[in-house]
View 1 (cartoon, rainbow, N blue to C red):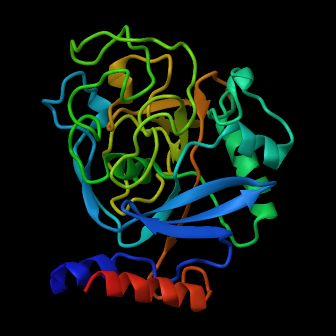
View 2 (view 1 turned 120 degrees about the vertical axis):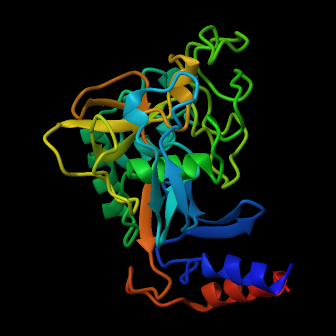
Length: 304
């Protein structure tokens, strides 16, 4: 690896790794991750590096909607952490003692669904009370799309064509006149399909994922720093990603959807986020321990 490439990689890594709240951590070819255990159920958070991207869809993208524009630049000064998978039924049950899912019989590693935006935030509050320092939250809409794209600018992170071997949706209702395929009519396990370039599973399909933002009919006046758009009169909240019962075009990286915050749907779940954390460590007030120093030393040695 060239020296300038090594410097670029190190500049976008968090200064504190692993953090005090982490029960597990590691590094693979997707990047670094940290995890927690709740009643022996693990959830991993993937590091999403700080960069900039073009949010929304170009006017020539097939089956786009006007609310996906205008296409605009969003710049992340700080990285953040995002759940490797959607929240599972088993994690929800470990935290709350209940399982609201319609597809409960399909198995604990399926995503939790049939939860409202309010339910999602109550779950997060409970989780944060169980894991000191975690500070979990819902992602902003900008964070969600940025992480979904993982450096790509096509309708899906894997390209321009969608087929049921790449995501879980109503395969009988394809995207952009593509080939028809299987319609499973239910969720699948959260690790059923391939990870995207940043190590995230199923950003497209399976369940809609709630975001923090209020709904706006376009991006005029939207934050340019990746933060949640909390201003506005709408009580509806954003959700992203499409689901097992939606058309193919609903799964596009840029597609925007909204629902009343208190309503329940059989295809709405969530993915946890946390951060951002600046490289000085002032975002958390913690200092890196020996494990963190060792991990950074190893990363530097691998880059030589």
